[in-house]
Length: 515
Image (cartoon, rainbow, N blue to C red; front, side):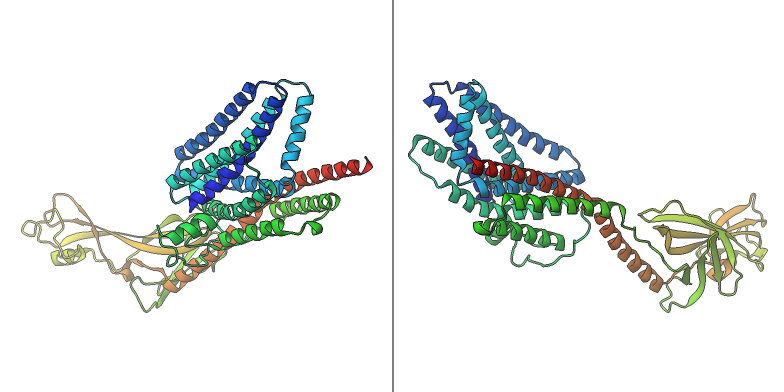
């Protein structure tokens, strides 16, 4: 059903451009002036519009995946702004569109400028062509089938040309006000779908990280490739897995513009009242942007400074000690051992996990100074170490020990979220006919070296839950401080521009009354 969306877009935009061109052509013919400059202007505008569309498409394809999603979000937002402004403008001007265009053409003709009307045709077609290029590109990005989307666009343009030619020749009479109102309602639905597509692209680009909870699971209703999926997703813009932000955006846009289109004419505010309302909206949104950008405090992430330690693979989770973070470093306390201090400091707060290692030397006061061959084999994973030959080196051997405990800390947002240790035991053998000492990595009991140990599973779950909650809060803060102010500033500027237009309308109405 994307074919229907692109058909209506091309028909509406194309018809508006064709109407302007046909009115200008009528005036030129009535005044015995050549149509060639006008057609050159139209041709140049069409080429520029196509160049814009092709250039945007090629640029998007050349970008990496994240940048492609970002560009799709920007194009979708621009398309929504274009269609929204077009719908609002047509809401007020569609009934008098032909009359206004004729007046503008008459004024241009009275100026006795050879290029006035061709320039008017060029700018009109360029405006509609540029809007169509952006709107089509956004629609194609959200389309399930580019082929059918292209077919709809081509059919829509051909219909626009046929209707425009019929109006020009006098064979077709079209109620422009009703036509643009009906197509405007349909385009509101299409634009609401583009809002969803733009929000999805913004999330995939890493710009919108809040409101991503899946509200509904509609895969049972919208299986891929089905007619229902083409109708609901292609026209209404509702995906099979709508998120909270997408559903709110879709409903907000749809409700707002349905109210704008359905609002009774007699209850619409006068240009003076509209000017004041828009000025107030511009000021309020600008103040809101300043507050969000400057007065919000960032969230803080804190965990308990004492980490409970347990033995790995111990389902009973019996505590064997604690790892306490102090202002100067870490204090490690294990059962039956004295507290040991380790200097430790982290770099500036990092949003991604970072691993830090600290190595402690271990002592074994009762370490044996001699080992038999059987003891060496037991320490060396029940194998004879390479370089030892039982017949040539039967033992006993002189032994020297180098014991250490490597502690690995996982740090995120300046807090230790996990810790574990690994024992390193090196044994040097000599004597018993060995030509040179042999260095072996052996396995000792954790009680001998004082490790391995790790943070308990209960603590790990608590730390992960706290970190997830902090990241959700951080996403909200980032949206409120960085993303929302931009949106509010855009709304403020848009309201300001509309207020200026309302003020001009108010002055124009006042002048008409005085006349």
